Image 1: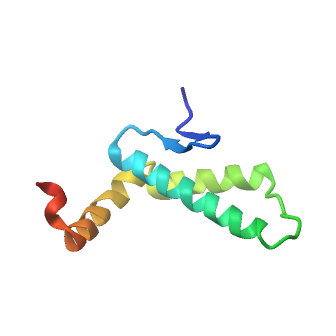
Image 2: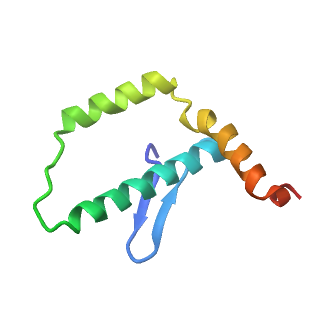
Length: 91
């Protein structure tokens, strides 16, 4: 279907994408937003919900800036970092 994210209760997160780069970036963003939410909730006060219109606008702006190539834009840099940290993954 049209959805790329799945949160499995007691099992973790799943993402899919048209490419490995897209799936990886989706997982990175998914995990990061979960961590941010947990840190915000640990403060003990009521969270402020962002209106859906602002979320939709942010999604449109992100798609326009990245030309819907989010994963492809981030992937080469991530591979360079991995090469520096441990090039043995290519073997």
